[in-house]
Amino acid sequence: MKTQNNTFGIVFYLRKYKEKEGKAPLYARITVDGKRTDIALKRKIPIANWNEVKGMAKGRSEEIRSLNTFLERVRGRLTECYQELQLEKAFITAVGIKNRFLGIEEKEHSLINVFDYHNSEMKNLLEWGTLKNYYTTQKYIQLYLKQILRTSDIYLSQLSYKFLIGFEKFLREYQPDDHHKPCGQNTIMKHIERLRKVVNMAIKYEWLEKDPFINFKPNFIRTSREFLTIEELKAIEDKKLSISRLNQIRDLFVFSCYTGLSYIDVYNLTPQNISLGIDNNQWLCTSRKKTEQPVKVPLLPKALEIIEKYKSHPKVLATGKLLPVYSNQRLNSYLKEIADLCGIKKNLTFHIARHTFATTVTLTNGDPIETVSKLLGHSSIRTTQIYAKVIEQKLGEDMNALRAKLDTTKTNNQTKKENIV
Image 1 (tube, rainbow, N blue to C red):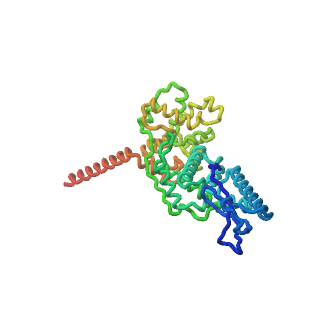
Image 2: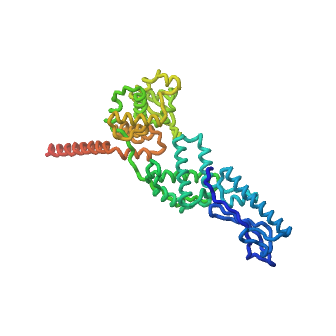
Image 3: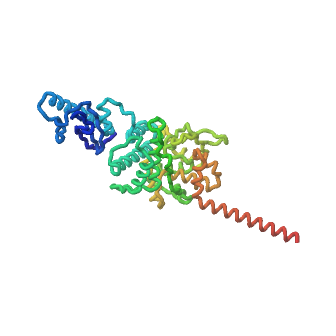
């Protein structure tokens, strides 16, 4: 764990209120970052023989010299304990130094230590993009601890509702020094959501008894999902691109628009993911990397055309992938170039392809939301309903169809009445 430079001090003093027969017990006081703890040294000295300014015994007797030698050994060992914790990159507190001096093993975990443990354990389980977000959340927590709470870390037992509210307020008011924008409401909630996952891990491991989130209610703002209209999608499909790499990036994007797969799921596709479906047509059979939900997607003509186009591509033959793939960062960079060439003002990213599949390609064309939910690999239809809410065009078409149906019914009833008469 990374630590900041701590203020560290040791003083020896007498507890005069415990004086008996002119003698008082000696204590060592350890102070770290303004927080202190005391150690009883199991020694007594006549109050008259104590130099309060120097924090040592005064006199020339053998007993006095022996006591001062003892105090220097204690000072030296306490300093060693502090330096050991520094080398271990541990969370340094006065209590921690005291426990190290007394040989007491610390059983309580600190928040930053637990974050470090989580990130280390998840290193091979989470995608880098997801893991990077945990590092960012940890960075904000460390800033909050340093700037607001004036410490480098806290124990898990110190987590509270007040801590969470304070962290939320800090994120809302924090102004980055670099080019990054201040955190919006949903970004703030995402940071707190990641903190909650780390805290839940600590609870499962029985490192923390009380859940500080028990009274905390996240407040996400519902946002519409960006997607391409049919005109924008067609503009990308039909655009003549003279640069080979832009052609490939465009085809990968369009492939996702007609399959609904995310970047990582397209990246992982191999020819083995294609099989005959129940309708004797070719289907993609895979599982979502993010949720491990199985996904079966009937291949639409446009997607099949792209697969056929790259069947003998050198990069496909060399990697064994279904399509020639790029890193997500390069891919999104090229997509912005393609958007400019096509006159599209939206911030084009690969994930917009998935949203476009959900809206423009499927729901707008009348596919039932239950079907779309299965095609997207959603574990809950409530997730899919987010897409349904943004299709105003489809709502308008449905209402126009209903209006026409009602007008037809009304006309038919009027005709029947006239015939009867």
